[in-house]
Length: 346
Length: 198
Image (cartoon, rainbow over all chains, first blue to last red; front, side, top):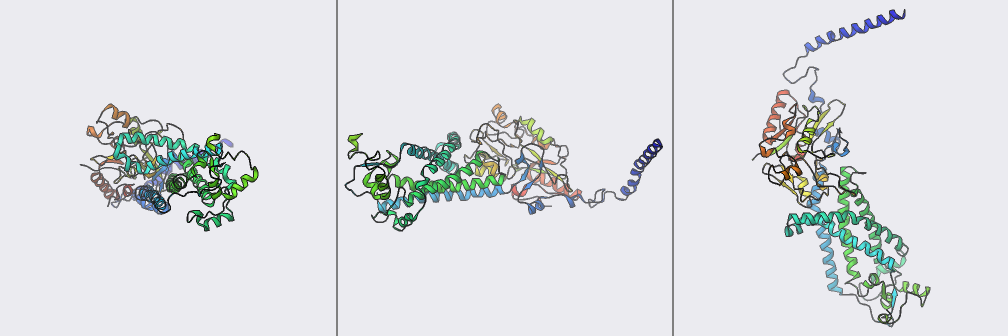
């Protein structure tokens, strides 16, 4: 019985297979290739074929399947590259020049108008008070040195070929740009570390409070000679702190995306990171230029805070009266107060 | 002088990847780098097409514009080439390229890519034509020998066309008229800001 069923089913299958081509033959004969491009199946291949216009209607780039492991190679066409080109070549150099030259111009004008901000002589002049300890100064200068090199090597990506290349020639510039790129990539790490350290060390003195509002309303002592009350950091310094923290994090995050290209982002993500990194970078440089100005040329006595770490007590009293009181309350004759004649003492 | 272009007739491409293999072999392209690749669109669905893509040698090439060290140059045949001696491997050209053409050997940590490598339209680099230095950096220079790019020359279905833009556009136009359909000159609008009018 079982054998009979097997035999029967084999016969049915064989008959179907033999009959199949015969069944299709007449249909094929009725559909020869016609003059208007119809194919034997009766459908125009173009009717259901993908085309660029259609794909661009549904997506901003054309992506398919690829047989190599490189995922980003699956993008066939991404016209956003042209937009990135337009930003980088037509807008970025002008934005960069406007921000940085604008800041230098503004600082120059301020210097001509206000001159160097001096401290009035008082009884306390000549006595020193410790403002930043060795660790704070180390952290500051590590970050600062990295920042300056990162700025210059970063600006080289935008302005190098326009300003430096015509002067020193393509070969020398190529070699220089290569080293600039290495320094940009490797010094990013101590810079990021420095930003984190500065944040941790100084956050407690940088929480905005009511004093800052009064400081801002009083013009911060820039206008006129009156010094508003301030604790360890005034509103302007707090502004620098939060700028470095905010921009530092933004630069770090966008920078990390570029240090590990395509790790998390696709091509458009990379382009956006580039745009953000360059725009914030330029603003950051302009902001730090103001910080450098007021810390060196703009104000007498300010540099000592980060130089030797010890500032003149008269200067400290004028700029950070509440902080001086705090420090002196801690220990009136403590280690942060040195003798009246520091030169003789050291 | 001719204005060299590529045109991939997607209605003929059978995704055999012979162009990719020929390119790798001809120029001894290092492992991990693909100057040419085949992308399949609508894979497994009706209307599936494959397109062989490499550097399109764009008009007003975005890679050349964004390069921070100006290492690109355009030849008299409108082929976009670059100097590996000047390239710093920053990767900007990849962000700007609409076709994903620039490739980088991985040489170190933190995205420090090596010198960029891309399709040269089989015409070498800035070194003297057919020199050893040119071959080592950029591969063979078939154009200097009077030949067209190998990928297109050995394409079994003649889907990939290389040569003067007007001539290959004319060949494609004739095909489309004869067979009655064509999915278009892929990438031409983005690369050359014009397409093949039929």
